[in-house]
Image (tube, rainbow, N blue to C red; front, top):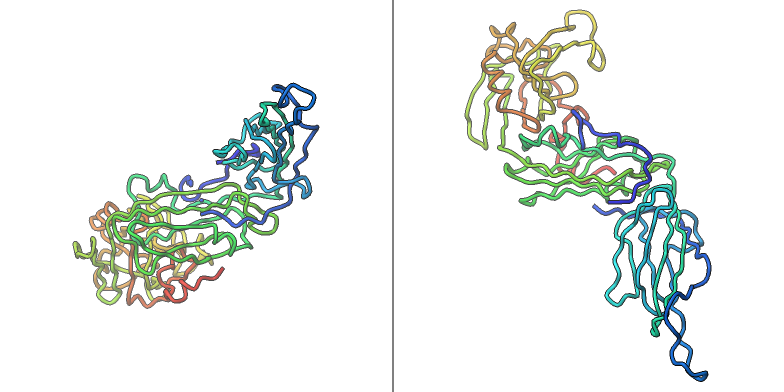
Length: 412
């Protein structure tokens, strides 16, 4: 929570309107804090009434950040201390917006500490009121200014929480933060990220590229788990003048362990629910020229109808015998390179005996709809004996095909 500076709307979230962010070790800028005027007496009397009565010192205060270092990081707490006397109140006000930064006063009334963050590029008036032992009141006013970063970036989550709010996620779903600008201070950022799970399943972070980092456990998540992913990156230097725009935290719930095992030799796909075989389907996978990747795939999207055009692939295939432009039904994406599990009525005669597709796993209409109804985001399709290469790490999601010894070592 922070007193923002109103610099614009959030740019989020990924994957169908997402939304969709652990405390950071901050690279603090300097600070500006100037006291204006002297302590002002507003009420009360000095001790004693005779001319020989000892004088009681007025209440006085100190503030950090101090006046020597320039604009401060907005996550820097404001601390006001009574160097003599005690504090009655401290008010911190955004001079433009009129909003307030709240704080806590210590039990002995000698220290006040802010408990929410300030906003970027803002100036705050700090008014401290206190009194000496004789009840004489004093007031001091300070100014604190916060830094204006060159740019800010959001830490969005995949999948977007609203996409899986009613269904939960599958056991294969990695925990993902995707930043809206490249991150160069990866170690500092990674230290600000956390994943907690119930039951406890420690996971490790691995950077897919400069904007995306994933966390997974050694094995698939346990069904029924609750997982909270957090990025405390507000005020954190992400590198190259880019700072975290806000913190982000999301909680996911893991549903049953749905795992499909597709075999290119038997041309069948066996369906397991929490480890029990519940169905076997005839399939046709990718032909020799366009083989399906082997390894664990994770469902990242599902649509009842998809127009599949090979010109949209990377690299594109816009002509020749391997080109295609077809409408397919009951589609569940298992890689970004164009692999889906879906219905294909044109290959029903080959399903169960040969691989003739463009890389997808083809099913008949009945099996495709059943699969669509039971499998969703984060569920797993393991492909074996397809003749294809291993699913690449970057190909949404090749995470589980990276050996744990490599993954757990990290690459920040």
